[in-house]
Image (cartoon, rainbow, N blue to C red; front, side, top):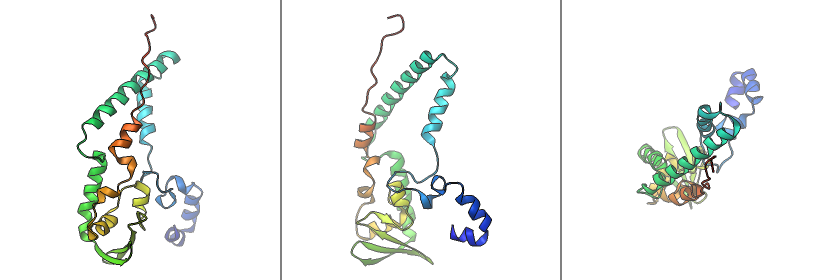
Length: 187
């Protein structure tokens, strides 16, 4: 933001008036499990509503209840197919970070601190606090490639550092709730 202010003060002013915590990673709260600005869940739900929103209210609510029952059941079945403890999509992201880490040089700073460098770029990783100065680890709950490089340097597995909310047990808890089946209208 300082670079933007120097390059174009009016652009900086315009952007700051747009509530930066809603669009800029620099202002995102950490430990939320999301490293991007999107609203996928709402978009998905809106798509479901498109199919039923023209119906009378009771019929619409009943259709939404059935959609939710089917979705919850599908999610439970999907989770039962997982081979690993970590969600497959998160595992794929971690595999990418493992691949990217090979380009970075790790310099131990003492204790749990590491400097991870490539050319003129350098990032501080704190293994104990599960943080990287790039903030991606804190934002996503998944070790970034700088953190993965530091973890490999100390012979630790990045999978051990993936946040609990991306694990099979947490997923099962999230989809463990059951909606009560009801009788049809003629009952």
